[in-house]
Length: 182
Image (cartoon, rainbow, N blue to C red):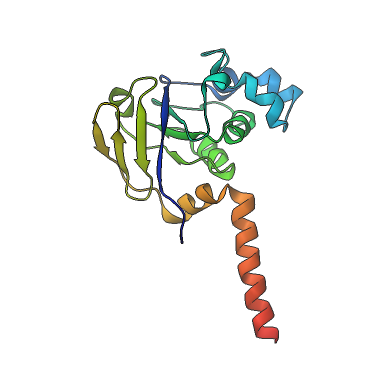
């Protein structure tokens, strides 16, 4: 993974269990109105739960959620807004298709953080080492150990998603082809 930093630190924005993609994460009507316009989607991220959410965040902050984060349809509009805000994600569980959508957008995510909701409060400063699975709540001192995120998935997330990962792969392979042709 080279020089990619796997330890991320930021402020916690805590959410509960069972957040639906097309309701609590991003109301479906905005996905239909602005399908891939992240700038127009950002103000509507989590508006059903926290109306001014986008104004409270900074790049590097964490969304911490319970079970079944982003359940339902795997529409990407909420993930586009999260990526535009440069947010990270820790949750107890999420459907596989949503997990793929988050990774493809370059959001650092760990979806198997059992009990994480009990270790944080809204506004806490937290730290996650995605390569080792070490979690630290800097504010309270609480710690937990989770499984590390799979290396190739972590690299895709930290590079910025599927697009940048494929560009990196293409550039490395084009160099190999150019060298063998010379």
